[in-house]
Length: 77
Image (cartoon, rainbow, N blue to C red; front, side, top):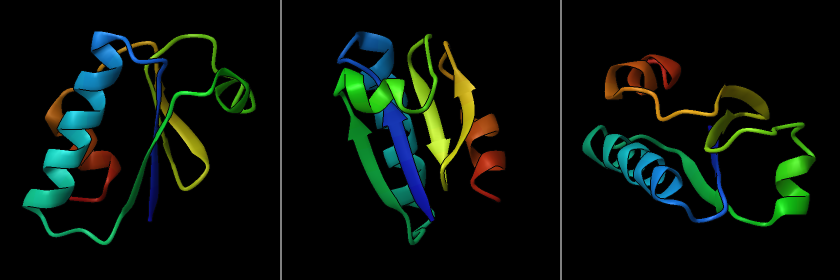
């Protein structure tokens, strides 16, 4: 599974990345977790509101930090 956290480095973007990283680590998931901060790469996903989370190429959430429960659901836990 490939998970990308899109964000330019704002506090919400950092929070989302840290929460996803924590969940992946706690559950020993085989996930490639990437932080995408380049605006050109972010625009390729047609995302105008940050932060956003992309799982296997599909934008799941944009413009907010989802709860840990929502993230777990997105990751199939």
